[in-house]
Image 1 (spheres, rainbow, N blue to C red):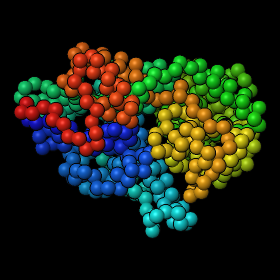
Image 2 (cartoon, helix red, strand yellow; image 1 turned 90 degrees about the vertical axis):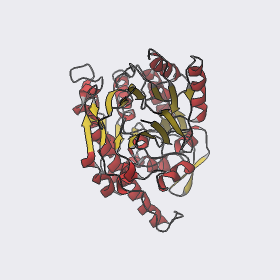
Image 3 (cartoon, rainbow, N blue to C red; image 1 turned 180 degrees about the vertical axis):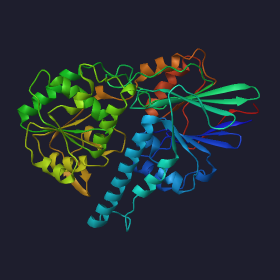
Image 4 (cartoon, helix red, strand yellow; image 1 turned 135 degrees about the vertical axis):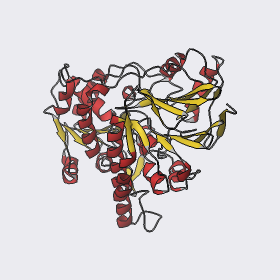
Length: 462
């Protein structure tokens, strides 16, 4: 029996995660994400997958984020006919996120055709809502900590990664003539002391470790988030404008609502407009799946932080447009978190030229994203084919990160009793991965930072 790993994404970048594990003639794909960020990466979404989708036998998802699940409709449309395995919350979230992703692509293609700013004639979406919905019957759910068989030789188990609701690390055991070989895929690991999400669970054993490295070069600064947000609200009052928060619909939005609820226990509240249909749908899941996060119905905060009287859910696009007429003392939360699409774009289009307003990003901004350009100080950004001047104050709150930092990654991997035979650092920009690579190599571990499309033999003749 031979076991190989091919890196079809999430190698040398923080996006497009796809890791193909082959056990003899059986192919298991861990994650199936879209490339985001830099144009050269996004263009890969339009290329043929480097392997025939019909040759893949099974898919396992660590979590629902689009850079881990967003390629699924294309995989199925191009010939994949197997199942998708994930946790119960991940299934519900995937259905929300993929539907939203498809709608956005359809709307953007329609808008590009109407305005004539696309180089393609006509502009087309990567996939449609119909494509997304077609995969839902193939999604199978599994409980955490309960092993299930993919085939007669391969066993899989999920354990908590803490990153978002339902996020998992994946243990893959392969039964060979020379005993059990264990591979651990970290997925995206969350910080250990997030007030909303569970802490990552430590792996117990690994012959091969695949570990994310998003923040492999840095440690989060300890911040009093309530105090920092209070200062920003007070500055907004002095400036006489509004606060616009581009936020990821899943996890980040709910964490922001948590902190705003706490801040408003001590100062006068402002109206909060949650302008993201997807974030609204996701927030409902936090109420449904209380065992997967820290907010319990009978706690001091509980679910009612999402139902506070100052929180207004904006569902219709006409309501969303009206928000642009509000001059001051309001907080608008909208997706996407890196300003790559969604309703946040029309808010930025109207608010960026207004020097009274504050644009508050809430974490990592990938290279090539509009959010990265803004936090790096660009004087203008292109939105809807137009250059929009940046007069508003732009800042980035790093204390809300959904990723473990360098020390937490070292701590998590350091709980393995013996160093793995091989450690692969994935899902990180090169500078981040290289810094973590150096730290782990100092342990005497065999560590590799693979490139896109690299093929590695994990075991041969076992």
